[in-house]
Amino acid sequence: MAMIQTLIEEIQTGKHDADLLKLYVDASMIEKQKERYVLALETFKDHFGEKEVRVYSAPGRSEVGGNHTDHQHGRVLAAGVNLDTIAIVAKREDDVIIVDSEGFNIKPVNAATLVASEKEAGTSEAIIRGVAAGIKNRGGNIGGFEAYMTSDVLEGAGLSSSAAFETLLGTILSHEYNEGAIDAVEIAKIGQYAENEFFMKPCGLMDQMASSVGSFITIDFKDPSNPIVEKLDFDFDSSNHSLCIVDTKGSHADLTDEYAAVPADMRKVANYFGKDFLREIEPTLFYQNVGELRNTLGDRPVLRAYHFFGENARVLDEVAALKANDFDQFKTLVKASGDSSYKYLQNVYSNKDVNEQNISTGLAMSEYLLQGKGVCRVHGGGFAGTIQAFVPNEMLDSYKTGIEAVFDEGSCYVLKVRPFGGYKVFA
Image (cartoon, rainbow, N blue to C red; front, side, top):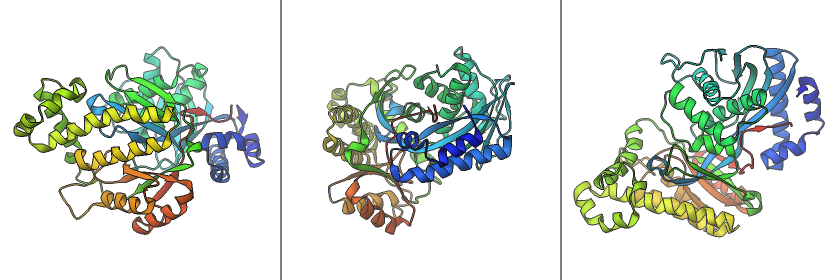
């Protein structure tokens, strides 16, 4: 804990450069991050006055493997990235939580009242109240604080800015009132609880877990109430690749039924065997019955189930490749994931308008630019939005220039996998 002006001077003179490099991985980002942190500290001071503060960070996340597997209780592979939400925080003596967040008008929340309300559903206040309730329900301590938050996690790009917000709140309350004793997995579960019960939006656990734990993580949702989480200590920086997220500028409007049809189709196959989820079915039983499944359900549900079984197994292979430090094999598997999503899952474009195929064009152009040396795949839910590419660093400039010639300047975000999840920045 330090006074604001002291922290500003320390950041400006380079005292914390090593801390920031450890967090953001990319040396080219450090000066920009220093400016960002100083501005956040100055803004806090303007709003709340000169105080002793702590600084916290929670990352966005990128899905790497396991496209549309989590809702069938499957496996996923995800990574925390070096875009994040940061908070300047001062503890209060009462139970009031005041969050001043750039771009949002958030009302103070009294943590003494932790009851979910339909009137508050869908608001930031609901998330704050839900995280506090989740911690208290688990026997943790809660209390008030003042925070100024600012985020560079891209909204609508599949990087999950909401999970970063939830993780950040949990991390703050863990350190300010529980001596940092609430572990990352619990913070993720608390974030999901807040979103489900207070924000009143159904969601899985992948986003929160990837943000809270950081680095590469794999999650097995076979028992969704007790998912198995493993952090992979793979040094992404040593691969000499960058992770690019490309905004293909496709619209998500009118796609709700497309997204809903994916789990619905998979559920049809599960129901054929008397089960609720595909994970409950032995893959060999599915393959033995493809002919009858086609006749009964049609081809698309069968193809989407085919994707699930292949993708669910593929996550294990991707994890094994990272553990073996075999990045070439990992890239081969990422490409296979993308191919399966395109051919079998069929979430790359909507049949409502076959002339609008932004993601398909992004993938085609990426394959042309990468010349087989890098790989690409649809990112997140699909149908519109973003693609993901693992790009060799020596090709990064040419790839960025080429892909932005198609989707406009600033559409390609160059990221690194960050080794930390929810984090107290200056210990």
